[in-house]
Length: 116
Ligand SMILES: [Zn+2]
Image (cartoon, rainbow, N blue to C red; front, side, top):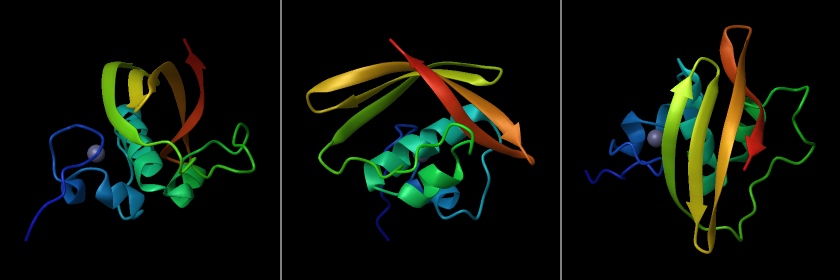
């Protein structure tokens, strides 16, 4: 059976990486893992996963990823405590963000981030 490489760039197969998180059968054990799964959700247009993993306090009403953006890669630069610094690229640009995460009822959720 062919395996699909995970879009988040770990080199793992999708089914062994972000797949179970997007399917909501496994929960992220650290902010980096959650951040990677949220990138993958953007790639795959999975609004449910983005909604589920966004803190209700900061979550916008519409979390659907923009289908016009074609994501091309993710680079995690640092993951310390409850923050993850990364560069996410699409064809035509990239963004550098330090994201903040929080544990809520035992699950990591995205709070907000500083884009530079
Ligand atoms: Zn992944």
